[in-house]
Length: 127
Image (cartoon, rainbow, N blue to C red; front, side, top):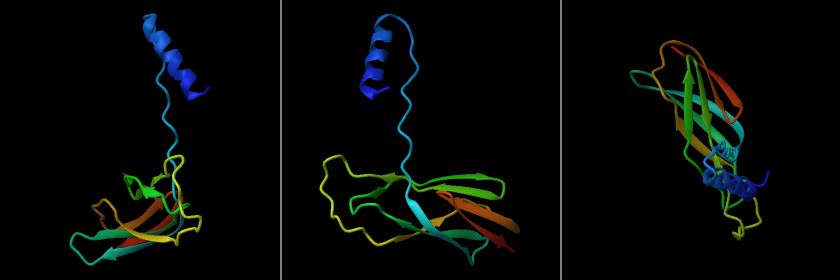
């Protein structure tokens, strides 16, 4: 259903005293990640840095707020892509890949872990 029609239906339902479900947000646009490597920093307690290489689709792309979620020994990182506004003039040449260090939320006790960034996984061990 087109977004304009859904908004119109919401207004109509609100005017009639009924209720309508909220409009679902657009799905998050993610960067294409080509690699994830992990570094254990020399610190106490140990800190872990994920070095992520991703490819912008246009020279006008922007990185949105990085999201992290941790469940036990698995860390999920989301690098959202904010595409240019419609009608924005962008350079037609594809930009070079970008390397981004991401400090992972700790603590990290000794053991084996995995980090996944936009679907690309790397495993690491903390002594």
